[in-house]
Length: 362
Image: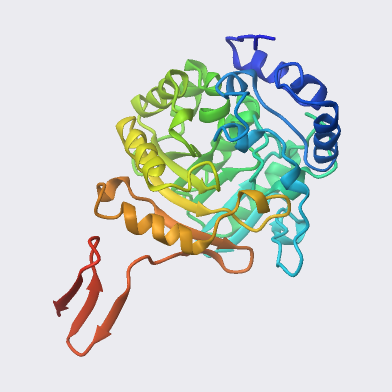
């Protein structure tokens, strides 16, 4: 069956594939495979926009876009003796919806909804045992309490609006949040986290741009953080959405995730990072896929990540190279060095991109 094409983002959301029965209309699968995938989606739900499904080679089980969104029995692999990260527990919150890990910035988790369920998501646990589209987002009263926390903590100057996906809430609620935050003088930086540029680029409309532009002012910038993991996601629709945002003056940065079978290859990462720069999207982080329940089949080793960064450094512009990051619930984000360095008396010994030992005299 051909995948229908829907022009508006509302139609894309309305017709998202959220069950194995729906998916089987487009993806060939045996009765046994269907039964196995039903077990997966009972634990970790499914959601794919028709737009993103149309980008996948459904006859290729190793398609890099497929691996990110279509359920796999690998998600049910047992992991013995490992410290699995359990994110999105209310114990993490300063008040409901606010994670305050770092002194001067907070993550403001407004919604649990997304345009698509990433099979590698760090907050995958928050989706367990929920069905389809009926996920929660903060009420206006809860938003007010979260904003009051920010207002009362003058050290906070940087807000990451996240979830879930911020562009999946209504324009009305998003504007309510932006307006309230811009009334707080000590909040200088607002970042909006969204993967709609990948899954639902139709969401970036002239109306949305016009609304959020009202809350970007001199020395009070608004940044857009997104996630492209493979150059196959950089379609004309995605590029158009990025152009609309950058033309309106927003700085876009990308936080890719290192995923086995998707982008754990220097050539694939090089192509992605170069193409991102060409559409004014700055490669910012390359996250190591975290040890979240249900992601074992997508994780590679940190050693492999370091090797990839070593291959990239020097071979492509520094502007195209993100920081390689591991993140822990307790310790936050930790940049991983990928070159050996020794500090000696009055000098430093380091290794360059060609593997040559260099002595630098201080």
